[in-house]
Image (cartoon, rainbow, N blue to C red; front, side):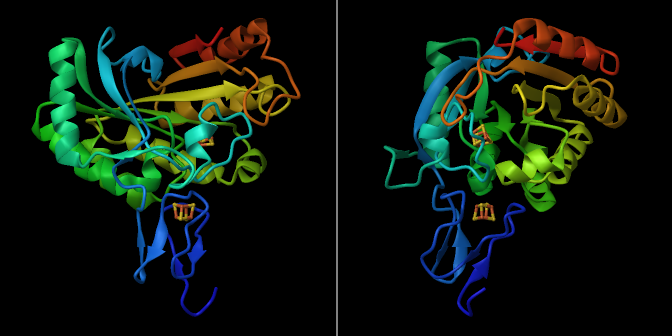
Length: 282
Ligand code: SF4
Ligand code: SF4
């Protein structure tokens, strides 16, 4: 680490950033001698989605949320379906600034257009690389009577999770594999995501669901699913798990979609440990 570099502690990558440099997530940088969330409030996507699309199966079914995406992510999943925003920085994508107070006005407008709209979702890219926005917007969103929904890979420090957890009403966290080797290949750490799941599961005001995308040849063994589901059940057997089907995307095109039968079989394996298991993308 150079003498002028500062280390970011938001995720396990721990980027050491010289003045002016962005981290691996492209959404934080060393600005004027401090690590700043340069992606703060810079939105690349705003849409009203059904909560089932997040996915949330057992939280306010039939409702919708105003879904926000920014840019950047600290992981690099070759199959990312949102690589156009997750794997780029501020110069490579169109964004517009929406400060937290402006977001509340957008939410109120969305509610006027859609009476089923119950809250705001931080989603599409990795929202927690700019966790300060989730915190600041989340406080105002709550103050205006809306809910906060977090959709995240959860590979961030415990401090970050503790900052935002009290503001989150529902979360869906990706548990991409039950192998640290797989996580390391994506730029993350399994234990870090496990800690995030434990912390959110222990937050009484947060409804928690988890998603595992089954990628052929990566995480599709029955043994790995058994271990994953057993660990989730050890945290809380009431945790909802979505077992979802991979489709070729971005840089992962060497295999076809996960066979539907195999997704169903792995869901049955998970049901050996968990009461609420859903399949998706089938
Ligand atoms: S949040 Fe971004 S800048 Fe910070 S350590 Fe992770 S990848 Fe690096
Ligand atoms: S964590 Fe999500 S947004 Fe980030 S690269 Fe992986 S799939 Fe894409």
